[in-house]
Image (cartoon, rainbow, N blue to C red):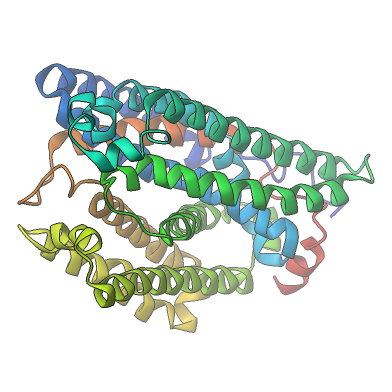
Length: 396
């Protein structure tokens, strides 16, 4: 590794990812302006679209943080390839905290528990009011984001210390931080999923919902990081360490999390179906009527069956561009999954997309991508002194 020229593992000024940054920022600003116009036309629809966009995009940094912590505990050459892209994604969490503010201010347009006139006539909401109330909702969100940002910045700091090689404690600190961070992340992501998504239908609950959210975020992170790593391989210094065997490992992990998502979804459905309780089945009934049944079928095909079949191929997993294409397809599946989770409570009896959905996705996505590229360009794109690096070099 010592023979690498200075800057060999940094993005050059003319790299495609850096050229994309300005375009992403322009798209982000345009999308947010369109959302602002939409607010004056239809504020309720604006908030619904905003929630879809927010849940989709925050899945990438949260999932990236979870995968980083897992790699910090387990190690492995696969993590060397995606570590810096995932760190860069996790470092966008301050931006996501700012983007959460409109959701907090507009909670009354999204959540029935935040509407006093409805709570006053609903005994179940009154019973849950100790938890589902606006001040506590905001306080919990502050706790979530502070925890996530602290963990993400600590990981990034000790990662750079490990690169510098001047602090012998770096490896131990990263390992200890990863173990403790997984506990913090597991708890906070579970309750965040309850607050932001499950409480849209506060009469319904699922004990597996938090695990579903965490697995989905990890899948979003892999789906996002794989195309980025494929784009970085145009650098000869990167290609030396990120060979086809590393992509094969990443493809296996993408397949594993795809299967895990399918397993969790099937488990929740079978338990609900077998119990056949009115307060539980309504969640599925609204998603199987008025056009939502088509969305459900498409989701199973796009998010599970097709990628599962394609990722069984060893050749696809060892072909960087082919695996990147599958990952982009999975990101489209993740978007459909978020739409399927978030929108049915607002749109019965008919499933419908809205132009503000595009504005929200473009607005938040553009800002996220611009900041992500900025963070990625600030450091070497591979962790030079990661203990797994020699393994990756030998396999390339």
